[in-house]
Image 1 (cartoon, rainbow, N blue to C red):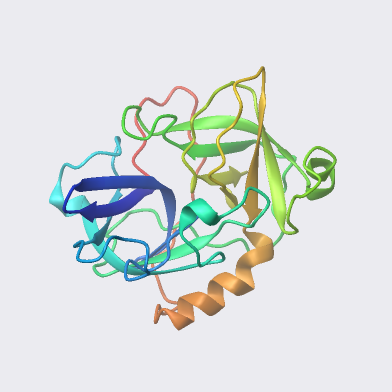
Image 2 (cartoon, rainbow, N blue to C red):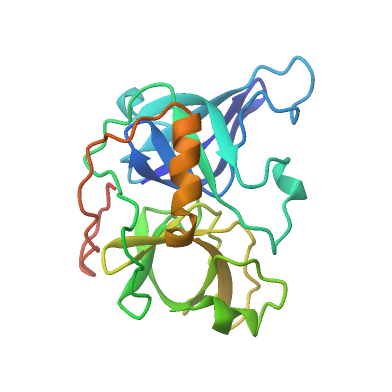
Length: 236
C-alpha cells in the first residue's frame, strides 16, 4: 500500500491512497503529471509516494520515493472530474518501490460475492492502515441507485457510515485486486455507496499506459493476502 501527493513551496498536499502494481508504479484514482498546468506560475512542485507504512505520514526516507509523471483517465485538474466519470490513474516513481508486496492485476474476473475489503486509512493523516469490510454491488445493481454511473464501474456498500476514504484505496476480493475507490466522499447516513473503477475491465488501459510511461512488464509480484481480523498492524 502507498499514499501519495505533492510537495510545494507552501508544504505537502496529501492526495490519496494507491496500490503498488509494479516496482515503479502505483495504481490510484487520479495522478496527472506534475508539469500539467494546475499550479501557480513559478511554484516548485514535486510528487512523493510513501509506502509500506502504518501511517500516511513522513518518516523513514527509505520508504519515500519521488514521482513527476502520471497518466489519468481524466487528464484534467482534479476539481473538474465529475462523480460519474471513471477515476483511475498510474503514477510512475523515479526510484524503485522496494516493497515486499506488489499487487498483480487480475487475470480473471474477480468473485465479488467473496469476502471483500477496502484497504486504506479511514482518515488519511490520522488513522492506522486497516481493512474495511464491504459488500460489492455489480454495475447493473449500482446503476439503479446512480443512474449516471459510468460503464466499467462497481459500487461498494459500506456498513460503517461516514468513512472519509480519500480515493485510490484498493478493493480486494478473495485476495484479488478488484477495484480502485473513487474520490467522492460519502454522505453521513446509515450506510454509504462508493464508486470504484473495475480493474479487470481496465486491464488493457493499464497495460497500454504502463508501456507509454516506459514501465516494463517484469516486476516482483506476490499474492496479496486478506488481513486477519485480529491483526493490529498492516504494512502493505
